[in-house]
Image: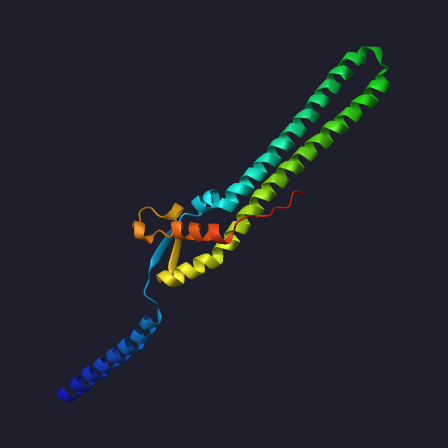
Length: 185
């Protein structure tokens, strides 16, 4: 009986040792974790190219707003003239002019919406260009710094300032991306 206990104990010890040895190599395959933090919103708002394109888009938006305001004023004037002339027009003639006016208003609304969508697309395109230019910079910095996980600052509650690589990325991005071209459809 004493022999059975020893053999069972030896078997269990050998089994535990075997599994322990199997687990250790798997554990060593994972790199040491090092976390970095980056403020993407700051980069998108403070990169030189992003500032320039933002000013361009703002100018386009002002021009669109002025254009839409002019058309809107013309439509209001036309609506007032139509209302004043209603008393002297035949009902058929008034109905025809009213339908034409409503078509103009619908076309104006469609055009205005298309221009607003175009502005949104310009902003999205500019952001994408900044992010695409930033990607290889992030890869190089994370390799140089030994960072294995990179988190956006907006999801981090607290971090050591040494973990923040935003300034490094912003400096490199400003050197490598001097301007952004956007399509002004």
